[in-house]
Length: 106
Image 1 (cartoon, helix red, strand yellow):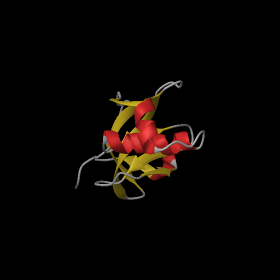
Image 2: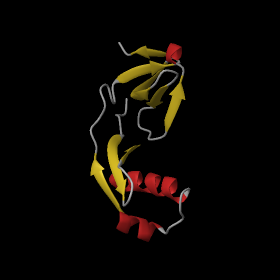
Image 3: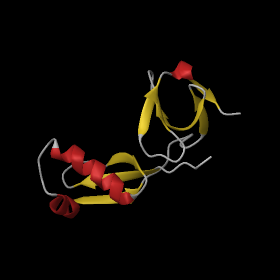
Image 4: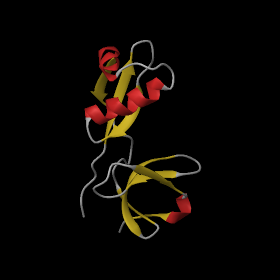
């Protein structure tokens, strides 16, 4: 089974507090933050690089632990009262599932 590829990065944009992004690299985290920022104000990626800083964030408890979602292996990313956020082995796109579809890996 291929491993867990995501890491937690904190992206800070001038004038805003830092926000966590789960990505496979600092550049991918910055690109996600740029897409989110452009919904507020469109800027070029070059300009966004000048006004943003990426730092390695702190992984939450259980981040990357092996789980089973609908009978298939996955890795835990986060959860709230309604959904479990997960990623499949060797991938970086996250998905959501109902907690009743999720089991701990043996």
